[in-house]
Image (cartoon, rainbow, N blue to C red; front, side, top):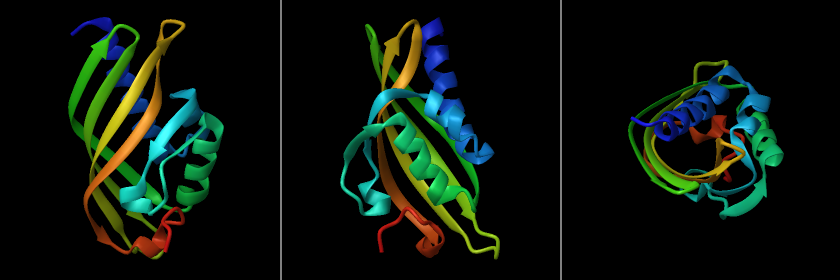
Length: 143
């Protein structure tokens, strides 16, 4: 595996681990200055372009009070010059203080770009296969 594949794999791992560690600055650092997002499958919100800081702040507001654990595998990475695409199969476990759960089985489709010799995520699309539990515990879901 070459250095770019390893760097992208590490960037995707840091992205997921940042949620679970509540490392919102670390999450922001994984992202390009502007990021396209599409969480319409889970959240019911339209796709949008936003700053990396806004993305991190929205996740902090929605998830700060939940325990989360993102487990990823089946990673496919395609690199073309200074851009890349990655598909990552993910299981997201969530639990609130009362023990209520919301677990989501999904596939992330990431776009990445190489800037100043480092890879940054510039697109995030989440395709939900199914969820178990109560969406009421997740502040980011439109009801």
